[in-house]
Length: 318
Image (cartoon, rainbow, N blue to C red):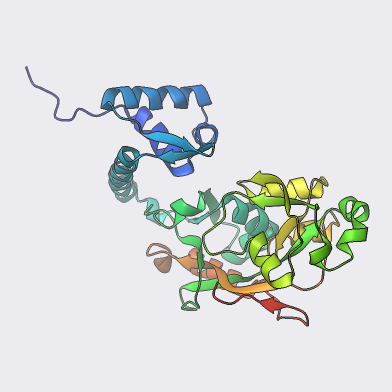
């Protein structure tokens, strides 16, 4: 009797685990795989029972990988990458007229989509544009050979031949017009008078980027800060702000559609600026693809950052 060479879980189970580990959210993993959350949970449970080890745990209601989970995730990524690379080579995938961009869901929705039609024109209508969204922490470690351009956050200037700076970080408080009218007495005064104003806060913030604490540190802090709600997605936070649920920290370059539609209004004119930048860069695959190079040139011409104005403050040591 010939024994099987490999004793590994099913591809379905490993795919469910990889998506869950990458997104750290069973619901989003289910959505990305076009299945149900219960199916994802079942696959994870079966994997844990088979391995005799926990792969996930929750901390402050947020899903996290255990040490065993992180070890398995790296192994699964490596294996899947090698399989995908072989399939790409055999099928001649790289010869297809496609452009694949990797970024967070927020960057896709708030930065790329408003420019999408112009981007298609720039790279050519015959080029199929694919946008792959991932959590911020996962983008830095992606090794998918199909990706031509990726967005990431950096703290320094970049090589213009392979990088394009999308925007430099500048933040200011924004809210809905009705919220501003309701709290106008306080909001028309300096921030030290904003005690009790409901604040909307990101619970999952990219490391190094500005927070409410940073903004108040240079603008003046009220005696009482009231965090009304926390969101792990900036789009959800902006929608909550537009619905009048609180004051949001608005990033220049990501909030323009809301401001132009008057769904959100700035509470003050001045920004707090940092050294942080959002960059798009060519991957090793993208460097050899005409559509990707055209895309980077387009993004370079569509940068969104304005020169500092009177009253702007630069946050040191960001």
